[in-house]
Image 1 (tube, rainbow, N blue to C red):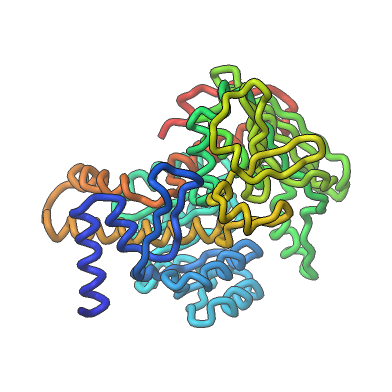
Image 2 (image 1 turned 180 degrees about the vertical axis):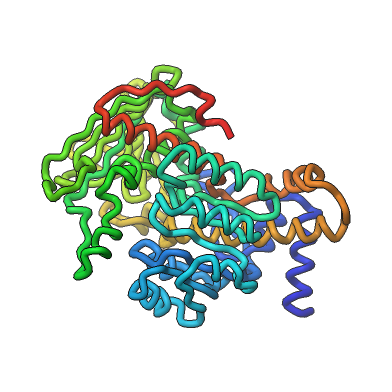
Length: 455
């Protein structure tokens, strides 16, 4: 049997079987295992058919994406694009077999490119994404989706209407096995009554980049201008804000914002010290704070409930139980770490198992060697391949059928997608931080109508 024949067989097995087990058997690349799920660990083996990708934007983060893709066998980079020659050369060195384009529209005309990853500055996303969807390419768009609500909505609506391609927002946590498992754990009711969430991003850095070319220096420092940037809460905080919305299954009804420029007096007009309080309809709230003037306590997120608090840091998590919390049973045997006067139960895929307790010490780092970015990109590649395969089979089997019929046909495929943020999650997270940044810049409270989040 040829590789092509095997791919067709696998594709049809998946589409006709319609089960998660079939998907796991046919795809390769990511071990999926629950933290302590009742069904045990799930592994799938085999070769995933490749999806040729083009990377648009070869700046610092674009090159990180290229490095990650270089380790994924089923994501060959066939094209790279950047308007700045030096960045294009650097991107080309990371993908030596790829064609180099200075104009993204030329890349979209390349028939070899099946999917694109948009890693340009936030305010430049809209037209690139719209053109890519129109060209029939699968799209992975970095988060935030855009710098204005109107642009974000236009992207989300275009993605919703582009039935024949897969769209994914670059909210990596939504694909990260560790974070997905933890969401399921929290949703099980372990927190008790959910009270609040606190998140922070502290890192002392000027956020300014240098260049011998004044024009280029202005261009690459777009994050320092409020006319183009969503500031700390948008460009840094979107992932933590999204996790709060996701875990608590709510969207904010109001946001209080506070911002000041205290450390970096260099002509920028974006605050370097911010606090945003997102109020949810049931009385819970998220307190987000960020500064690029101090690094103490770095990056963390804590969910507080009446039974326990759960601390997330560096893709790991710990549970700190209240004295009157009910006994869960398994935590008696779980690995524990000590934080000053508190002892936390380690929460992570495999961490509560005896073998892992014996193998992993209290000072160990992340036990999952697959990065959040790698999970996110792998899931994009696999979901895009299967989406395209389903569309191709639909057209072959139901020639002349309308878009509504295709939409119904794809609903079964959606049940078996690997975890990833779609256009809706990307839009809602983007709107949340756009409004949070607006509140920060105005040092004010903003009320949000729930219709703002609808697509």
